[in-house]
Length: 353
Image (cartoon, rainbow, N blue to C red; front, top):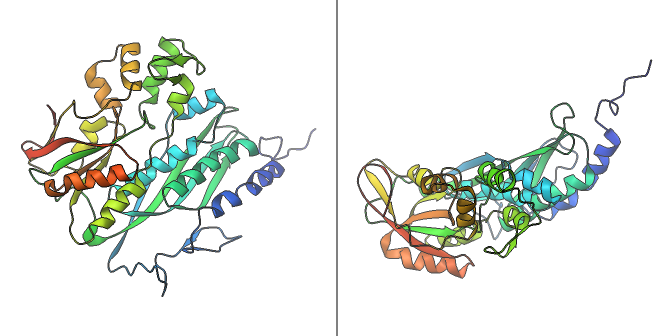
């Protein structure tokens, strides 16, 4: 009778050690002096402040802000493309943007990768994308977990989860409670689907239309795979620059990432009672991926609005006096931004004009 071994059960410790050896450099490149050396430890260490440093934050009443999320079935696009070096950027983006929307400075990030078996090259690609995203979001990647679950996932399958922690002074928390009538709604452009609506998009593209990732989309000027795998925009630096520009006055009254539920549901979440957001549907440029999907799948307008971001990745609700200045700062940071609506009195919710 053969002896039972861990390797025969689907978990290869030698392969796991080889995979883990590839990762430290991808973590270290994201570290600042606030990350403390914890080599061999069982958790990451991060200093909330610099003691006596020129760059000391000198917090008065710091509040930690946390967010966790995944990237949904966009993972299936990466599998079809056999390309895994960008999906980690999506993971960082959705968590960092959520944390940002409370007015916080994102501090550090951890990841969870679950796989059917150890695959050092695949894991390195995934963590490369996470590391790249952390650099763009000014986050320190201080740890993570790789779980090998051969009885849970089929060969080639994997899943990701991310965890972001930030900090904000209590008096500078942005939760939408200060939104008032006449505030202006700014939209910052997305660069496509981000990480939302892929169950519908995949059904339209692959099941209904029988397209392949290598097929070219003339109206979009790229292939199906490249279009659908395009990483989610990270807005941290641009918005942090705006918040840092107005250190005394609280001119940004609310923020919302436009993910599942679209503008309608996500913007409504930050509106106080008795406050209504009126959106001018023609005030921004809709990327060609959305009309392409709508026509291909014969999707109704309301469903498009509620499933996809339709070209707006992040919304800021701001004081009208500062709206043009803030929009200029966002554009100077490399983003496209528009005034897409205004706040009025009325039943809490979002209306389209």
